Structures are given as C-alpha cells and as structure tokens.
Amino acid sequence: MKLQTSGTRRQFISAAARIAAAVIFPRPDSIWAADTADPRVADIAARTIGIDTHNHVDVPLTASDMPGPDIDLAGEMKRSGLAAICMTFATDYQPGDAYDRFLKGLASMDRQLERSGMKRSLTPDDVRSAHKNGQPTVIQAVEGGHFLQGHLERVEEAYGRGLRHLGLLHDSDPSVPLGDVYTNPPRYGGMTPFGASVIKECNRLGMLIDLAHANVQTTGAALKLTTRPVIISHTGLDTQLGNDPRMAQMMRPRLISKEQARMVADAGGAVGVWTHLANTSLEYAHNIRALVDVIGVDHVCIGTDTKLTQPSPRPAGPPPGDHSGLAGDPPPGSRPGGPPPGPRLGQQGPRVGERTNLAWANQTAGFYYVVVDAMLKTGFTPEEIEKIGGANYLRIFAAAANK
Image (cartoon, rainbow, N blue to C red; front, side):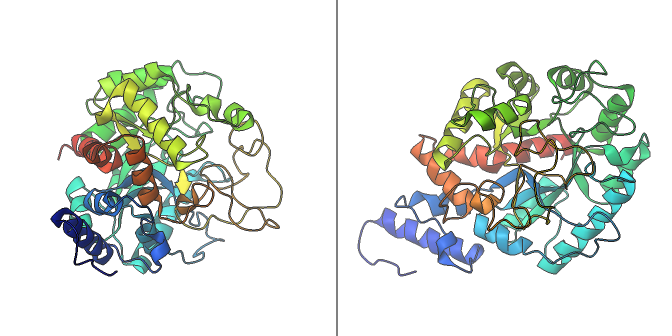
C-alpha cells in the first residue's frame, strides 16, 4: 500500500491505520480488504473486535469420518476481518450417540485449531489479548444440549474441554428434552426440569446460555431461572421478511417477535442478527437497525448462522425438510448441522449465503469489512459499530462468566 505524502493530517492518520490493520491481519489477497471509498472502514474493522456469535465449522463427528479434510480456519478468519467467532456444531443430524459425536466434534476441532496455530478463548480477556496480538480466535459453542442425555455432570465436563457458549436447543428434541423449540409443537410448557437444572449449572460454572431456537414460553421460563444475562445468537425480527416470499415462508418460524427480543434485552442480554432474509449487505444493516430501534444499540450483535470454512459434502438432492424446501430444517440423520444448505454433489460452486465470506452476491471484500461499510452507509456511528460488532457480546460473555 502506497502512503500519500500530501493531504490532511487526518488522511495521513487514516492511511497509517490501514497499514497497521494490514500488518495485524495480513490478507493473502488484497481483494479481501475493504474495497470501498470510505476510508473509515478498514480503520474501524481493525480497531473494533468483530465477533460472529454463531458460525458453523463443519468437522467430523464420527469415527468413520475422522480425521477429515484440513480446513483453512485462520485464513478464512483473516479474510473475513472478524477477530473471533463462536465456533459451533450440532449433534442432532446424525443417528447414534450424541455424546460420542460431541466428544469427537471437540477432538476434530482440537486438531483444526492446532493446525491453524489457534487457541480457544476461555475468557473475554483471552479474546481481547488475541485481538491485540493480531491472532484470530474462537469461542467454543455447541448448538443443542443433545450430548447431555440427562447427565448434568456433562455440563462441567464440557466446560473443562473449553465449551463456553451452550445453545440449549436445536431442531430436534434430545433424548432428555430441555425445553420447547420454536419450530416444533409445544410439549413442555417452556423449560423442562432438566433444562432448568442445566441453566443453574451454567450459571454456577460461568457458561454463557444461548436461547436460540427457544419459543417465547421457553425464553420466559429461562429468564426467570437464570441469574446471568443470556443471548439469542442468531435470528431476526418477524417484521423483517425480506423480498423473497418463498424464503420468508421458510424462515418465518425461526424469527422472533419484538416482545421476545425485549425480554432478552430487559434481562441484560443481546440478540444476534443473522444474514438470512437479507439479499444485500445494506439490507442486512437495515435489519440490524430495525432491531436496534426495538431493543437499543447495547443489546444487538452479529450472529450470521453461516459457515466460515468449506461445508461438508452432502448427497445430491435436498433432503426432506431442508431449508431449500418449505418445511424448516431437516430431520435428524439427513445432514450436518448448520445454516441453509450449500452445494450438493453435482452442483457447481458455493451457494451464495452459506459461506461467511460469500454472504451476498458479488461480495469481494471480507465479511466484516462489508458489514462495517454497510452500517456506515445506514447511519451507524463508529462507536455503535464497535458495540454491535463485538463489544456487546464480550460484555455479556463477561457477565455470564462473572469475569
């Protein structure tokens, strides 16, 4: 990058900051940098701690699939501009023992982190330190308490393995249910007794509770039990349906009302806005704005529900109930967990919207750069972007951990 010797002192400082950002987060190809005319984008992306509160990384969950292919986790994170992701996986899409899949998933992630020279952040200070040192990092999450199987002691075991972000629910009920899922018929009147005990154990250990996939009754019951703030890591308001009626019909059951969002915010928590139902980065920024208008800038974060790295191969043709149809997520055993499906065997190229760095058509810059640019265009201040980009999540992570 050539530094201009003319211009104002402000332009000089801005250019110097962009050079510093490139040193901190080196990118193998400059097209991933902020390719916008707004000089603030690279500065804000480098200075703030961008965190995706719900990002799927596909790794093997069964012995027959291990060790699996190597993935470029560090490279994709550096391209994205994100400082951290809540790296998650789900165990309820394959038959067999969910506890065994959970342990193998953690082992597979151990391998990929070691290969990438990365570590899990166990505390908010770990995240801040990694960002200061220019090192991408992850916060270990899991989507669904299926691995618990009624064994409360496994919460502490998982904590010991580095889990810090527990999504209580996912699409299917575990063998010992925790609560009502928003896409399934209500069965439990909110939280089950076991779900209540898991919440109390998370509070005791200092593990962040994620109420994504919880219906409004479950959310209300959980908030009465918890002594720490919680998060809904990935969703959208049910007023923001986008411009595609077919996609809106699919995703409508997975959106939350303003009432449910306010319940979480009033308890000190936050809601992550996903990239679904936004065909452009500007539409995404408008969806963020809509939620901010309801619950305030201190209670909104980014939770894409995308995949930073290459999705696992899937059989040709959409499985029953896939997001490419009209019935929500597929049943157990049909595909790995994660956001709407990507390319099937026989298709060419990645599906726009599944990969974090290909969240929108014709995206040439890394995800966080594009989002920062769109938020600036939508009227957000740098200070507001810093909060939504990651500071809100870190505050709640700290409150949950009591650190």
